Image (cartoon, rainbow, N blue to C red; front, side, top):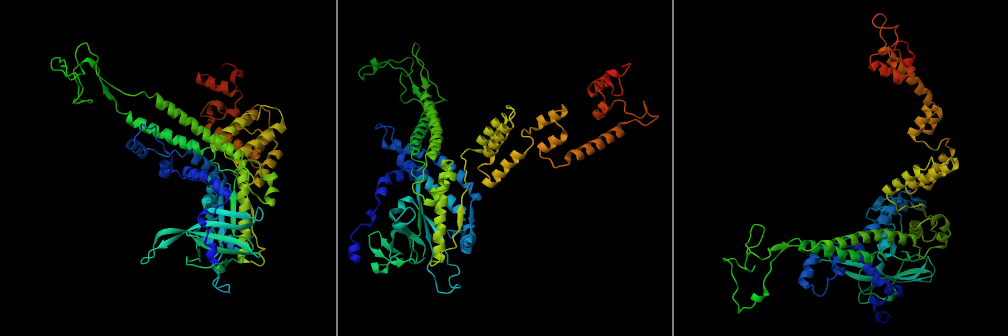
Length: 586
């Protein structure tokens, strides 16, 4: 039976969708990873007139303008910064320890679940549109708990090119999966890796049990160590589902912007070659074609040569030229073509940002569970929420497989995973600018309800993607309960001075603790008393009856009838008692 199985070519066993998407996946991989491989793959010759040597020289000075990659990473970072609000409740102790990075983390390399999803899964999902998570677990060493103390599930990622073929029972359950993996070959003496080989893992379900079969690159059945085997040695996993989760978007975020990055590469390369090649002016002089024949004697004027052949040219050398002829000159190409190219590049960079936003707005999950579809109403506020929905659904399936590994007969201790409901792609500068513009409208309309809703909108713009929905609801409640909405400190101070509002209401609007006004008035009274005492002349040592001559000019304007005029009078030599023009004789 093993001979019959080995008749097919394992390399050619691929899903029809895989065959259809393979060229695009290859392009997206090069575009996202960038670097020399991207340049080598997509840098084109100017035309047939550019020979191989010139093209090779231009390739050496070319760089990868990875603006498409930067746009995808901006989306990734927008989602990643909200992962701090993910809640994972329940699950086994090993699951809870692993998701926070203890005991080797979720991947046995110290990663928390947030790091694993954000760095490994999310980047692959956004750039390629598909990624797989395999939940693995080493075989048990014995029957006691002590013998299996450090044996637990862990996770690793399969790139989209390595998910060769698959078949579903339904949207959540695989019937069979074919995965490509790589294992190192080692030196016999040192034991160090010296190469790698491809192996294929075929998972299938038979009689409700998951089995695994390994193939080498020659389509021969092997065991887990790579030795020849037979179909009777298929490995049972003691699971009821294949421990593999595949996350899919309907399209990669690079689908519309990958070609723009390729165009930018060629434009930037042309500009670099032009800037370097045109940086040196070249010498020109006129000649008379009548004397180009070798049979005619060339005229000579006082020993002045009429040709630039074999001349020493440069900034430190000069030459004479005959009277009546045009002066030789160094000229340089026009910079207009390069300017036009640079303007086009700037336009393409803006188009990348526009198209990435359109791609996010059009994102739909290719496959989702019934539970996830029932959550659409609360999570589909934006394309970023779709991505969060896909990640949340995948994590829940990982948690289910994890629980089944640890307790195959009764996997009831399954963790509950909940992702944030809101995400935001705008930068901090964009949010601050938009909030500032809305803040300027806060006092334009005499509607209390309008002001409250506008204040909520400002709070949502500034904090909606940074705090949990519960915190945001508390902020909205505080806005609804506030007595004053427009709390501009300058405006409040002006209103208090003009008698439009009392200090207590203004203090509450500014958020000061209750009783702050009474404390402030007591402090102000004590302060003025100290100022007045320090600046009042003693009896018999100055004018008056122990009162300051001009309180307004001595730091106590509240004690003057007319502070402004009294201070002016003292400056021109007419001191008074702060009574201003009402003081006779001044």
